[in-house]
Image (cartoon, rainbow, N blue to C red; front, side, top):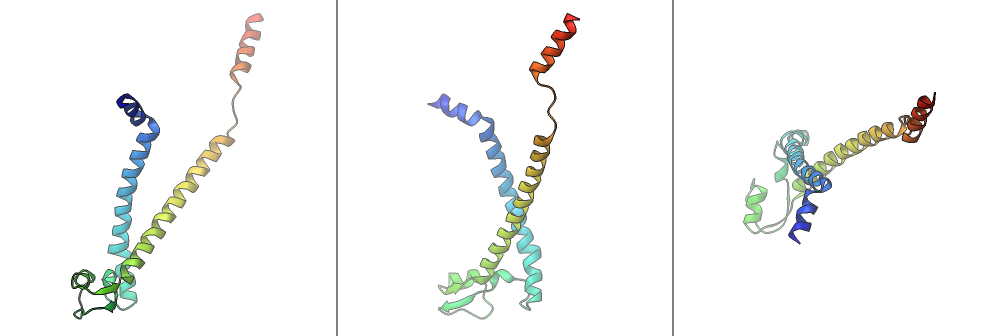
Length: 136
């Protein structure tokens, strides 16, 4: 069983998947930083709410001090609707989905060009040519 597991792990597709997951996680952190540190402050400034959009929430029940952060409101036991966090997650998703779309589109374009490339003579054709040349 251990040998089968080792053989499974050693397959190229499993290693490629592992590399993809690691790179995807790192890319997700980059997108999260782009959203949290660049896009959301601009949106917050445009909407007049300052630069910390992630702390935009609506109090559904409980008491929250004025100007409290989302974490402080939750820690105080308040039931809050965290709209800022939700909007940030949606923007992260849209950015990631768009980048993945571009990658897949480019990969399909490259694969299509490779498939459309004219194939050279087959092995049988080459051997036939060699045979004919040797006969002459």
